[in-house]
Image (cartoon, rainbow, N blue to C red; front, side, top):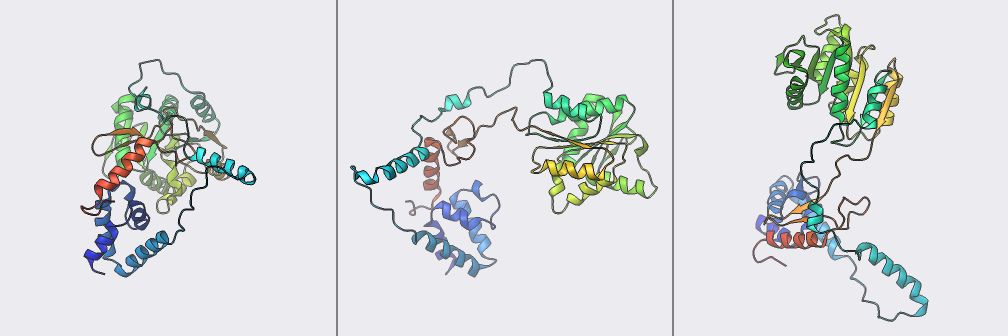
Amino acid sequence: MTTEELEQLLAQQPIALLHRLARGRVQRHFRTGKRRLIELLLRHSAENRAGFESDLLALIGERTARPAAPPPRPAVQPARHSAEARRAASAHQEQEPHEPAVTLQAWLEGIGVPPPQPFVPDPWQEDALAKLQTGDVIVSVPTGSGKTYVAVEAARRAMEENRTVIYASPLKALSNTKFTEFSRIFGADRVGILTGDRRDNGQAPLLIMTTEILRNLLYDAAGGEIDVRLDTLGLVIMDESQYLADPERGVVWEETIIFCPSQARLLLLSASIGNPHDIADWLTSIRSTPCHLIKHSKRTVPLRAGYLHPDGKLTPLFRTLGIPHGHPGQWHPEAKRLFARYEDETMPSGRRR
């Protein structure tokens, strides 16, 4: 079919089908409106038009082949079907809860800057610092829970003992941010940075660098060329340590851990390690000190999900104040209405349902 015919056929399909077609073809397609999604699909179809058309027709055929909905049951059911009717009614209640959905005012309540109050470390933070005295530590806690406090306090204690501290991150941008942050906390004369683009104050007791730079320094030390004072190294902080699972860069994290001097403590920070127990067991097996796992699952700052329509209309995404676990279909009624309206508005003129 021609490009124009293909475009018309795509415009006739519901956006849910287009999202299924975009899987593996268009990145972040769920953030794209229907008109823009059609443009991206047409652009991608130029690479393999035949395969694209085949997949599209298959999805259309699958949709049209679905059996028609059964006719509604009579209001009065025979006695022998009463149990089945109760089960169906119960299932319907689970899909469409009777309790009223959260209001926008209730959803926004409490959002803002909290009032100033004295800082008190959480028990898991104190536990992590205590365990770091006897071995390596993996901190696996949600984003925003306070991993940076553990890193800062551990670095402070190590420098008070005249030990060198290295903070390694996967990104130059994050390294630059931490350099600014730690310089403000500890003083510019006590913090240095080593990346592929910058080399400032390389003899400072606290060095910020990318993980690749740290791995290379450890390689040089193994070959007899020591670029930093590894003999005084007391603490290595590895941020975003879920990169251990990265297919391309994970080997850098593994080699860094393997070559890390035995006298230095390892502090691994992450919010998204799927198997922290396995990582802790692995570190214990290859290092001379045990590895302790500090795992905390409760979010200090709870998440709320909302939907902002292009016209500025804001509504909760779910019926509940928080994000429901295991019930992703409990959409807020207003969000469902705005979804349908957005789909209708983004369809080409003359093709709206």
